[in-house]
Image (cartoon, rainbow, N blue to C red; front, side, top):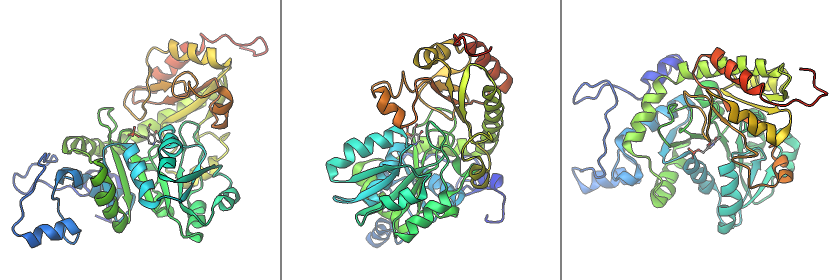
Length: 400
Ligand SMILES: Cc1ncc(COP(=O)(O)O)c(C=O)c1O
């Protein structure tokens, strides 16, 4: 398996025809309970000494295939399939943090992660600091004796800030703390954080991994001993397991992920280049553009630049709303990574309840748009953008 190229492993890793039926497509096993030949055999599986499943809340055979597949694709020892990306994030943080511990977190973090850290984690006595992780010295300064983990996301949601995984993992190693990376925007097809020194990778498999907008799922990849603890003490006790049907769908989605992601990336590049020279656009954030502050790092660390483009329309809040309401092909929606082009205006949607001054701290300006480039013909997506941008009233100073 190791000698096969990534696209071949995407299809064949951890998957063989069913030995009982010779069926090539993945068998779905919804069973909750499993029969053992002896009490000793059951105890060996429960303790993790022997491979196997024993009760549906701790996993099922279909999810196990998904776990083995993502572990192989990310280059980790083992993996855990859970009920959502947020389950993956909360489990991986709670695995390393207890009362009195502190975590350093990149300041451009997904909103759900921000909410977990600022509202739920403090109820368990967990402290946090949001730090600009493009500044390695600031990260070093933020680490205290009680710091038990470094948590990053790269490229970030929604502003596409790219962080240096190798440099940050060296800092984590120097302080002997684990580094957790949210790899949702990239998938292992474009970026493999464990190869760059990360200890744990988390995914919202809801996005590009499943890729069809019909599954909520999360994945965690890491060392066997950590994954075993997360399965038994967190996923199992909190009941955050993934069911077999959703694992089947994610496994089916993974087979075409390479083709899909390549198309998302090539279309996103064309769209970012179109937007960059459009008079109604103030700024474009896409790591594939030379103007992106971490363009060179992105080229080194990522195989391609991903399918999300963020940009600011001129005119702020009102024009941002006018723009998305004028789109005819792209759909206003909260998700990303689907075949359909999905768009959202954080200031009037996800971040509406946060005052503008606070929003700005996270780079959420009034005209910011997050655009998840779908698999439609890129010319159609560009034509749609173009007609919607014509609805924006430009200030007189801008030469149209
Ligand atoms: C970067 C990132 N991480 C995690 C999540 C959470 O994933 P889920 O909705 O599957 O819980 C999201 C959701 O948008 C995301 O964009």
